[in-house]
Length: 132
Image (cartoon, rainbow, N blue to C red; front, side, top):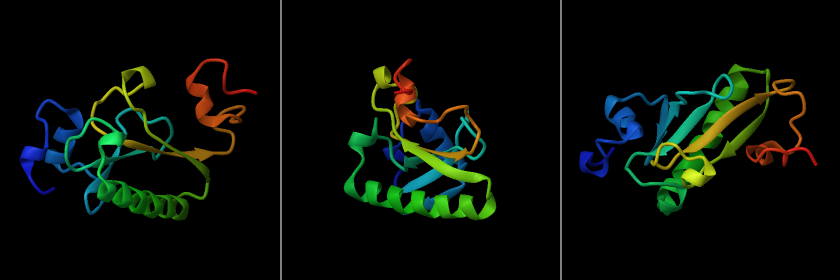
């Protein structure tokens, strides 16, 4: 973290950054355990400065987040051979489901059989749209 003044004291994720709760970091971003994990190993990749959403991330933060995601995917695959896939995504705005207004990317490990029919993946965020 470069400057504490880049953080918002009212933001949950900024408090996590200040408290040093990261599980990994590269450059301008860090990974944290999701507070309400979808699956075991669900992580959030956050910029180490406060910005509302993925669209506000700098080019460097986006490059660092890609590097960190690739590093974490390799680590997860090595540690847990039951992981057979991943969902990687971000919500931008409350209407899209963003509940903490600090940019974050979800890295969600997936396992065969963790849902009955995974076809459609993230399309499932809208009822009735996943199966097609």
